[in-house]
Image (cartoon, rainbow, N blue to C red; front, side):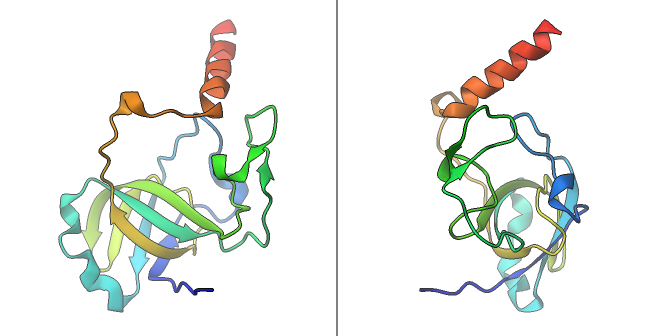
Length: 154
């Protein structure tokens, strides 16, 4: 057993989960603020040199979990570990955001998909050594192709 404590909180335009864009093709362009508690502000030293950040956070409004999930655009259930469902055993969320600027202990970012008041668990610079052409998207590849085909058929 272990306990995680927030390092800060998200300030977001989203008050309810229904407001957050979901599913393949959803665009996360909303701006928000990652507001760290004062004692963690020194940990932001030199962060301005990074364009994007991984943000680990807590699904604080999810009260239980499901091992199978029905994503918004899927036609069948998938294992929770192959989805971005908030109903997860440990309720940990991961988002990549674009860093716009730093203002003291506050990071102004673009791409938030969290609710206002979401507890922040950690922030890391976005670094990837995996070439884009080597990334597989699992069941989402078929779902995205089906959606693209439906748009063309209209």
